[in-house]
Every structure is written in C-alpha cells, then in structure tokens.
Image 1 (cartoon, rainbow, N blue to C red):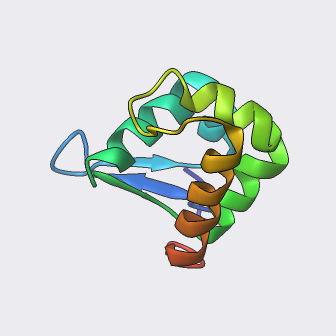
Image 2: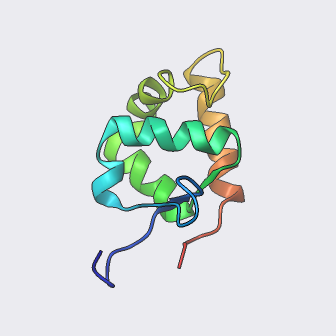
Length: 97
C-alpha cells in the first residue's frame, strides 16, 4: 500500500493485523458487503470519508441494495436505511490514520 493511500475503513479481521479498506476495496460490492457484516458485530469501522465515498460511489439506493446481502441492517426499506446511514456517518471518526 502506498503511504498516500487514504484508509477509508478498517476491520479487525483477520487478526492480528486486520484489513485496511481503501477506494479500491470499497469499489467492490462484495468487499463492501463483508465490511458491513463486520461493522454489524463491531469488528470494523468506516470513517466519515469512507461513508462519503460509499455514498458517492453507490448512491443511497445502490448502497441499500449492497447492504441487503449482508446481515448488517434490519431495515424495513430505503427510508429507514437512509436514517441509519446518516446516524452511522455522524457518529464515525472523520478519518482513519
């Protein structure tokens, strides 16, 4: 990984080092689904920049579709999902270093 690469999310697994998620990894819906699964059980965190990237890349509807393949969200629809994402974005650290 290049030192200038922005870390947008980090997952605890596999131990002991964990997984760094950059734009490249978050461009893959399967990796996003994996990350959301890990966030659900508090094994991962997405920075504010990471949420911004996900929303810019997938849009709210696209991110909702990706999330439906994970167990991370128990939402009745896109509107509830939107509220959950807003909460997660607001409670996330602005960036990971």
